[in-house]
Length: 275
Image (cartoon, rainbow, N blue to C red; front, side, top):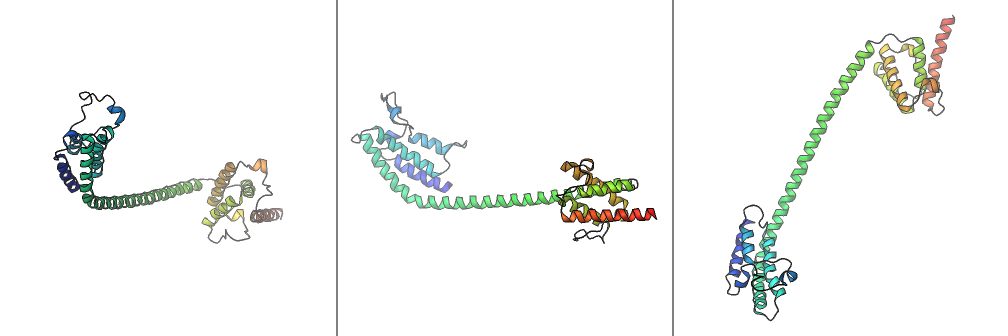
């Protein structure tokens, strides 16, 4: 782009050194020439001294590319042609110099297009690199968060196990209420409860169609884990063992089978006690 700027400066120098370029070198002296309607006709005044200052600006306010300079060069001549009658000397001079400029610009244009294409490709490549870097950073962040969550889950599980181990032995009445609470769970929560049982009892088939659940056969840690889970699940769904009494006709067949198993277990204990 710097090379294009240098070549454009050469074109600009050739135009401004023309014998007819003098009326366009400095801003129009509107007051001195008595051009009271100039700013009503011309929206954006432009001259070659202003263009040169913009090209030499070091504070970042200058031209970014040669097309911007080209636009202002054309504006210099078009303003003159717009304000002055086409038969006037200034109009003819501006029209002639504009034609010469367009001829030289056409010679430079292929290089301008080539450079613009290269810059677009570089910008697109840089954008892709930034996107890939961002995706890699996001993936790493996701892995780190996942690892941290796993560690948190492990610590929570350890804490749960510590609490369960310190719990007292569950009474027969508490087991009965726990069974009633299980009967009030939604099918989804009931499956989660069965998974809790299976964690400490590898032989227990949580996914079987028929489940024979003996509360007395479960470890104390499993029973207390079940109790905590059932209580949280019922509180989350707004149910309670007092208000619902364990009767919910909308439960699935799977829940009914578990409840029947609990009832059978209770009958077995009753027979043993009566004998």
